[in-house]
Image 1 (tube, rainbow, N blue to C red):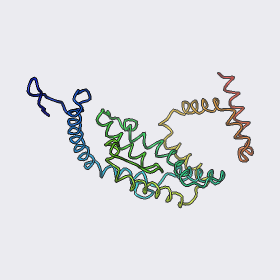
Image 2: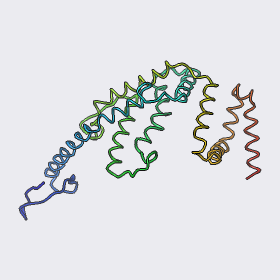
Image 3: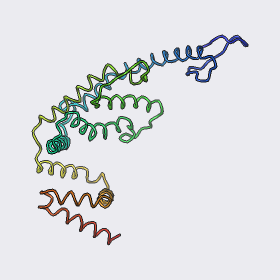
Length: 255
């Protein structure tokens, strides 16, 4: 972009926003032109990726179009959250929605979307990181129960998917509703499922390391955990509080 200069006659600008220009009017004009150029590129990129983003969101927020059956753990966990809400007389659907979003989409899937190197042996460059950040932000906005308000000063990366987010939100709501309609998972079925998963992945994880991490957590919050176990009827029948105390005592002697 070339603009006239009083001394040399011309002045060459790079395609970046001019923050340090003394002439505010000239700087605003340059910034506007650069923003329009970038916006065109953003829209073109979004158009290229749209189908892939739609397919990703539909797979994550569907009990049918996912290529495999919904894991029992998700149904079991969501039912547990609904039970806790009923137990504490929480009837606000937004609260239940937020609990479920914080447990799975916003805790797990956002990290995978933003950091594919956690799953795949790939290098994530700065450009890829910026693109994935937009998709991850759209994913988070789709799980939100608050109204998605945008204005002329909103960042362009949020404006990109502004029209798509209402549809994505409906997918999330449908996903939670469909899971609620599925048959309940008994404790026996859940235990059998976990045992099978442990068997299938037995050689992929360091069991002692995992147990050590769990023990570090238990020892740190031992009073709270023991207190909660003493108040739970099923835990009292299995004497879990006593067993935890015995475990912590034995580990303390060993250390």
